[in-house]
Length: 254
Image (cartoon, rainbow, N blue to C red):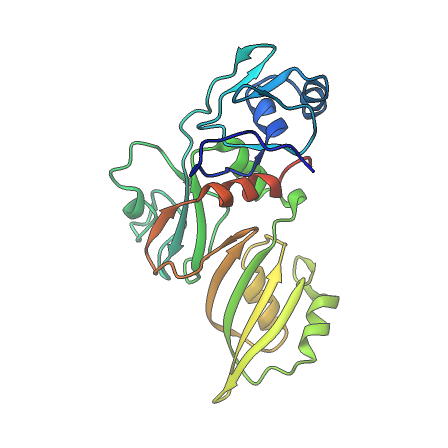
């Protein structure tokens, strides 16, 4: 089993891979950092770690390479916002519409959004000042899965799942979902949930509209390993250490 550095009782494991921390500290490529670990050149809290898979908390663990301590990471912030409907995904909207500046006013760190949500879409939006992570999370090559819940017109048949998974031709090319489920049907409308990794403009709305079921309400409930949970509309919170570790892992070694 992967080695786990000794920590005082009651501390929390960050769930970030040791080689990831070393690479972020500028000690070389992931492969080179793997080699340093295998050669027994890395210590965590005074314990030599020489196997792959160890996870550390870079904010509290004392990490040394060749006896020299590496610095703790800079003060990056990672925030989860439940964006309300009607708010533009921008820090300064040129047309004066409600934007994200309302939620970050008074903060010393300059946050920016990871990807976008349509103005009329609510739900999970990640804010950070970590440009490298934000770029990876938004880049299509990493195929980060997003989960949406949509209220649509019409009684959606279960058979629509196969059609959406196979793909529908849109104006800008074919598009498909990874998962689709009808959650409820009532009074000529349906509540559906879907997973999709494509990030094209208004892709969920356009897909469902092309399938004959225009969207009336749309909420993003998950982004990669992050889940909206019970966070109130308009509320925001810092990511937990476990969430942050999972987020880094979602773009690790790509």
